[in-house]
Each structure stands twice: as C-alpha cells, then as structure tokens.
Image (tube, rainbow, N blue to C red; front, side, top):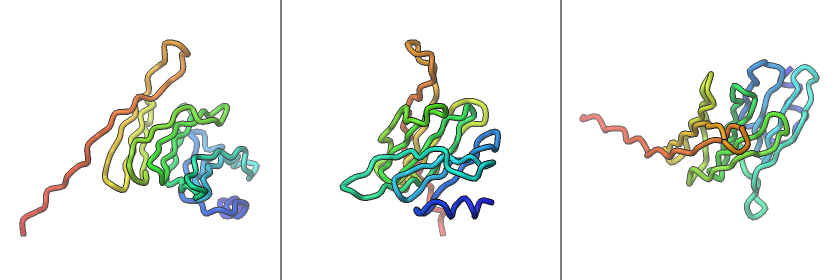
Length: 153
C-alpha cells in the first residue's frame, strides 16, 4: 500500500514518520514540502511547505511525529520546525544548524527532540508550557559537536 501512496506525489520522498496511532503518516519531500497522509484512505490530507531560497527547492531530510501528534521537520537550510497536529501549521522555527539537518530523534513520553546536522552539530529542544497560552513551546538548547578521539595505530 505504501508504494501506491508514493506514486501520487511527483516529488522524491526523503523521509517518513508514522503517527503514534498508525492511522496517518508524514513524509518529507524534495519539493520544499511535507505531506500528512491518511493511511486508511490512501491519500494526502494536507501539504505543508517550508522556506525556499532563491527559487531553489528545500529538501526535507527528516520528519518525526511527537507523542502528542505534533510534527517536527529538519531541512537542507538547517532549520528545525515544529508543526501543530490540529491546524497543520508551523508553530515554531529554529535556524539551529548551519548545514542540512539529517536526523531527528524524539522522546517516547515527553515532548523532547534532538537534531543532528551534516556538520555534526547537535541541538536539543525541550517542551515547556507557555504561561500566556497554555500550549507547549519548545526551548532550543545548542550542543557542541562531539569530537571522536582518533585511536592510536
């Protein structure tokens, strides 16, 4: 069934993440877009777009679905973006990396996300509850690159 779904999108699919209930999935593509799919119906529910620079498409290298259903994406501009599950709109964007964000990892219970870029820069995002809106917002905490020791020969 996944093959059938992929044929409906003309852009290359670069990343995929399932929702916690397995009823929907999110894909990141090579056309500056993310797509939310209804798996039971076999169709796209919504297209979400990320920034483009100088008319060039942005590659959405990584997508994840958080335990509360919200989504997070990492792209070729070095941005990590958080998306609302209900409205499918971007809620926060962080220019956290100077290079492509290739990997995202999320916590199973808490709304915690880590990202890693091609330049080995890691970042951590922790969710806190906003006192003004009552919604979760993410706080960005930058990490330094991890340097691996070179073993002696």
